[in-house]
Image 1 (tube, rainbow, N blue to C red):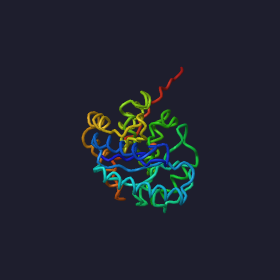
Image 2: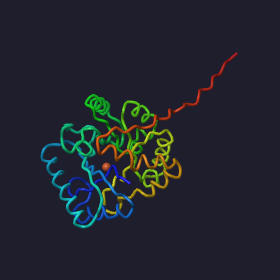
Image 3: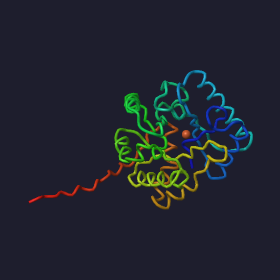
Image 4: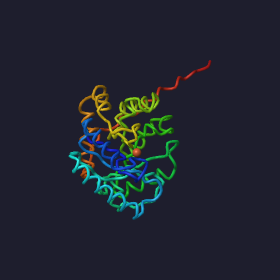
Length: 255
Ligand SMILES: [Fe+2]
């Protein structure tokens, strides 16, 4: 499995606080069957040169320390960029594996701000495929999951948190995750691990759940194939989403 969304760099964001915690997260992932992970630390305001260099240096040191510890997990560098952050597509850490092809972005949990739509449009005209982090946790999407159908039709791909389908974030989030999977609106899965015990690097339960309910082909695409292509900057061909058929309104004719 490839974990497409992780917070594994120590002291960059609200992820691990030191090397010990970062390495124990990777060991936990290995035990769970994760063999590749994209490091996606938060960029909440501005991705400047100082933050870029810190992320690059910390990532290289993590790769080195993991190798020294015998942790055979392939790591790629990217970011989880807030939709209202200031950044450049040319930054080495903005896009997944610096390929300038896929970019993981997040929305506020409450709504979808207007400038997020402008940003999605801007990514499209710059040849970047936006990947929305955990849409199932956004309140506006929870109220109206059909929004995701519209976003996918505009070229956005979707990353589900593994814990959302296993119930870690509650029954409502789980229900929304099921709706999105039923409509073929999910393309990647990530643990969104942060460490600290409560946000582990685990995906195998989610894999089993998706394998059981949506089949082997979907599970392999979501947990391996799509991520494998994305880290190389190659096109990911996704099946067309299934539209939401609204129940027809009853018509009443008065005589
Ligand atoms: Fe995250």
